Image (tube, rainbow, N blue to C red; front, side, top):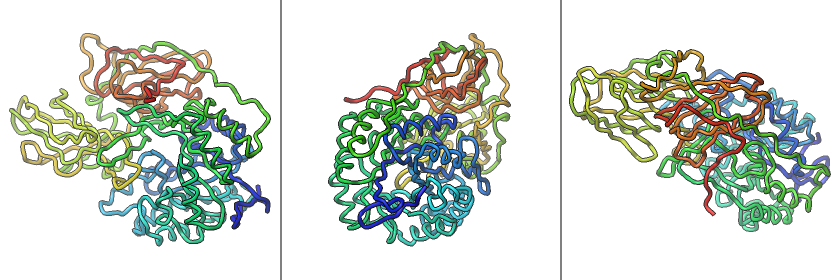
Length: 584
C-alpha cells in the first residue's frame, strides 16, 4: 500500500488527493474469530480505513512481559485489515483512555507511590521505551512505508485535556521514531485543548460529535494549513452502572457526518463497532464521584455489540455514498442468535472458604494494595483478628472500589467508593474473631485527575480508632478457576456470602447468545473459561453478550460468581440483548 503524505491542501496517497474515511474498531474488544467479519462490514460501509487503540496493560500485564497472541495478535488483525483493502490508523498510547481499565496504562506503574504518569518522569519514559520496543518491531512490515496498511500513528491521546508539557510529547515522538515508526504522526484533542496538546511538526486533529462547523473552524484556526480531520467523531456514548443506556438518533448523527464530509474533512467514526469490555477490563470516571463503566461497549455504534448492522449503519452508508465510493454489495444480515434456554447451576464453591485455592496471603502491618501485591484485576481479600467481643467501628480512609465486610464469615455490610462510604459498625461475637474484607477493583479511572487509581484498602484503616497490628492481604485475580472444589447446591443451607455457581448446557451448533441473570445481584460470569464480564442488578445492562466462538458443539460449562445472593440457581441464555432503558 502507498505511503500517506501530509500536504498543505490535505492528505495525499500515491501522490493523489486522499480523504480518510475511517471507523474505530478495537481488536481487544472483539473475539479474534470475529475480526474478519467486522472488518468486512467496515469496507461495505464505505470506509477505506479502520482505527484501533493498543492497550499497553493487556499486552504487558507485568514488567518484562509482552504478549501478542490469541486475542492480542495485532499483526494478524492488521493482516486481515489489509486483506480487506483497508488502511489502519494506529493509536498505541501509551495512554488511550477508551473507557478502558486505567486508560490502558499498566497498573504495575502504580507500585511506585510518587511516579508521575504521562510525564517526563524517567521511570515512566523508561517503561514506555520498553513497551514500544516490544510492540513496534513486529509491526514494521505493516507500516505504509513498507507496503503495509498503517497510514499514520497517534502520539499520545487527548493530551491537551491532561497537561501542556511539550517536552513530554517530544520525548514520545523521539521514542516512536527510534523504534522504527517512519509514517506520519498525529495528535488528537477536543477543540478547546488543541494548543495544549499539540507538538510542532505533528499533524493536529480534533475530536467532537456535534457542532461540526465550530469544531473544524477551531482546528483550522489552530492549524492554518494541512488536512482537516476529526479523529473521534462521537456518534454515541458509553454507559455506567446505575445510569441509563445512551442512544443517539441515527438521523442526527448522520446529518453531522454529512456536514463534516461536505466540508472536505477526513473522519474517524467513534465507534464503528464498540464490542465488549470482557472480564475486568472496563474503565471508570471520577469527577468527584467514582462511576464505573458497564461491561457492554455497544456505544450505540454502527455495528451493535454482536456486530450486526444497525439503522445508524444504514444511515451512515447513505451519507458516505454521497461523498465517496461505497461497494455495490449487499450488507450482510444479522448473524444468527440462539436461545439456549434455562441453565441450572447445581454446583457451588463458596469464595471465602476456598481463598487458598485462589491466591496466597501476604502478611504485613497494614493492608497492601493490589499493585503492591503485583496484580492488576480482580479482588483483594484482607483478613485480621480482633481482640475482644462487643461493638466495633471499622473506618477505612479510602475504599477502592467496593468492600464487602464479614465477621467470622458472616456479612455485616458494604462500603462503596461511589457512595463516599468510609465507616461501618457491627458487633464482634467473640475474642479473636476474624474480620474479612473483600475489595473489588471495579475498574481503574481512565480519564482526568484521578488517573493514579490504586486499588484495595488505601490509607489508614482502624477498628474502634486503632489500626489492627497484623493483616493478611491476598490478591484474587480469578484468571484460573480450575482449582476450585465444588459441592452440590444445598437448598436447605444456601451459601452465605460470595460463591461460585457452576452448571452445564448443551449446544447443537454455536451461535451468539445473551446471558440473562434475572434475580442475581452482582458478580461475574465465564463460559468455558472465557470471561464474559461483570453483571449488576443496578443496571442498565441486564444481560451479557456471549460470542459464538466461545461456545462448542456439545457440552459447555457456565460459571457465575455471585457476590451477594440470588433468588434462584438458574440463569437464562436468550437470543435478545438487554442494554437497559433509555431516556428519550
